[in-house]
Amino acid sequence: MGAGTQSPSAGSSTDYSGVVGEVLDVDGLLADPAIRIVVCCGAGGVGKTTTAAAIGLRAAEVHGRRTVVLTIDPARRLAQSMGLSELDNTPRQVKGIDGENGGELHAMMLDMKRTFDEVVQQHTTPQRAAEIFANPFYQAMSSTFAGTQEYMAMEKLGQLRSADEWDLIVVDTPPSRSALDFLDAPARLSRFLDGRMLRMLLAPARSGGRSMFSLVTASFGLFSRTVQKVLGAQLLTDLSGFVAALDSMFGGFRQRADETYRILQDPQTAFLLVAAPERDAVREAAYFAERLVAERMPLAGLVLNRMHRSEVTGLPAEESEAAADELDAAGENQLTAGALRIHANLVRQTEREQRVAATFTDAFPAVPAVSVTAQPADVHDVDGLRTIGALLA
Image: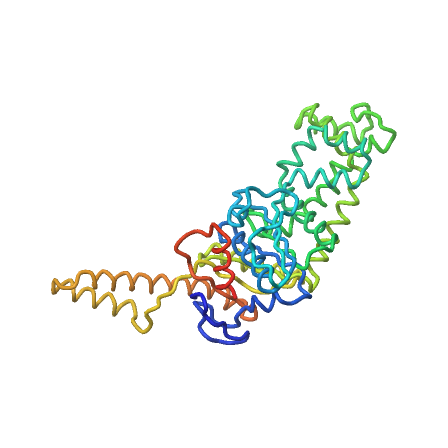
């Protein structure tokens, strides 16, 4: 799809750069004041960060919306493409955008540990917060615990939404092994907090602060000795202290996770699946689509990145290759023969990508889709983001 291509209306069955079926109206989505959150999700390496940034930029410049893009991209590509030296846990305004419509663009990158620290500070006393921060188990959990990044992304989304200062929040979901981790993290953390082990570790604190190792009841003693053998005494002591310190916050974690989950189910939110024309990426998008449907979350559409197309229509790959063979046999026009073979390879690649994309569009015919033509170079500045935004729209 070249820049300046006019998008057919939604519901069209026109061939649109490999997408057959309903076409996603990205501009209509971004212009709708009722849409307050756009979540870009999909497998890693499919262009989620670039898509999120391009959408945020277009929402600000074309539709005049005060927009913030939240990325969880450790490669810092978003900061570079927006001309920022760095991003951190606080939204930074992007300079040099066309704000004639009154729009603003801000960007931030999730700092997992800092967000966890903020949650602790907001929901406990300074003394208890200091105890938690000093605990070795907290230090490890807040930096490396499986699912913490995805959960803290949900926490930060909840914070941004409750501040009510943004017309639109665009979320670039974490580069997880599975895109579903973003939705599963709150439930996983709740299961961890509700787990039998933690409930038993809380027993000493709730019974007057006695050391867990002084409890020799039959119900707890065997458990304590068994876990101590597996984890080691010091780690178990750290874990017990961490659990006791965080006890008053556990309910708050679950409550906020539930609230954010409800926000994700609300019509104010739009999920955009992002995929590349590769089987694994499209399969991941299909898994996510099934999950969104099951969870009653608003799926707005599919973005297919890095699609190829030929500007030369009406010349099948077989005919192109046959013509090249004839030229070779005659010993003539080697340059033309090479161009014909390049065309044949491009046509075959395009057809292959369309077949892969069709595995999604055939399974979800009601989900609108749009494709973005593969670019000759990586996006590295605001102009590149504008180009992607124009292709999306």
